[in-house]
Length: 81
Image 1 (cartoon, helix red, strand yellow):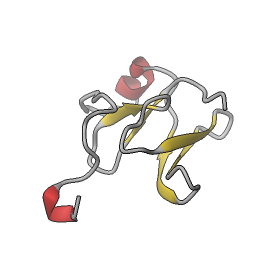
Image 2 (tube, rainbow, N blue to C red):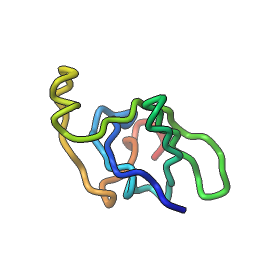
Image 3 (cartoon, rainbow, N blue to C red):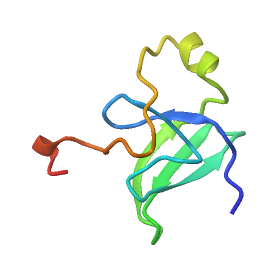
Image 4 (spheres, helix red, strand yellow):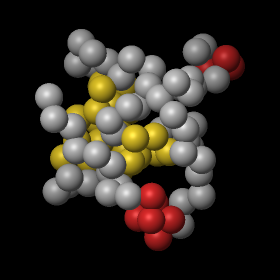
């Protein structure tokens, strides 16, 4: 599967790449609609986000967030993760 390279903001306000979202998740990306669906490997939708082509686009949108690697955990302990 060829996933368009780009970025999105996760549910904790971190920026992640569409090609390495972490958590065992995979991204379904529609660049025309600027949509990212973050799914489990079995296809269950876990998160929806806006697609950003590059980090400059996130900055232009006024979003101030840290770019985290795929190894960074999703969620917090208080959320059950």
